[in-house]
Image (cartoon, rainbow, N blue to C red):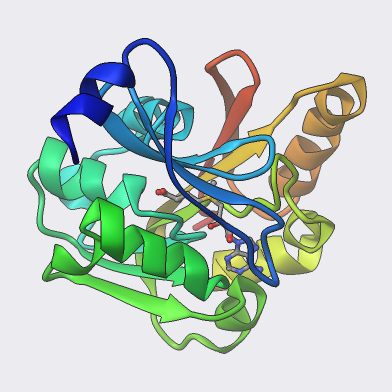
Length: 219
Ligand SMILES: C[S@@+](CC[C@H](N)C(=O)[O-])C[C@H]1O[C@@H](n2cnc3c(N)ncnc32)[C@H](O)[C@@H]1O
């Protein structure tokens, strides 16, 4: 990062690369307050508000007990960076990401390819949960197109597939953005859908619009 861009970024956002892909109309790497961030059309994907949400959300679970972690929606890798650099833990993380461009930007600006225990799977999270034959202690669901969680990730079938991938005392942190009347109303419906599959579901609010469903498996 050039020093001049770093200093300028405290006054206003400095865009360093802008691109698009089949899956994301707009992907912008910018420097904000001295740090690289990845944004989509209308949302932060990694390393700004999303990062702060998961800094808080990951405190809801006992991370030291979580050896095998699945991240659905890798982005530029805020979640692995919090686990490895901030919590200084060495869990094995599998991270699924549909968009190769996101991974390319993650490698170029955010050191995504520098984590020894991180395995990146390029593909659709929907297929991954259907076919994976592994169990996880923790699953972080962070699947967005812009600001929206696609409907297929809010279905009972998807919730059941997540449940199948969890160990007996496994947990899920599921990120959702309630940004208008309809999505705020949706929170209750999603919670009820989750409750019919899982033992415990608690909804936490972070950064005004984010809702994290903290889910525990039925034993
Ligand atoms: C908010 S970002 C994820 C941020 C990430 N969890 C982090 O720690 O930085 C949402 C990501 O979900 C990805 N995504 C959307 N639909 C997907 C799908 N069907 N399968 C896998 N990834 C998907 C998007 O390309 C985007 O990178």
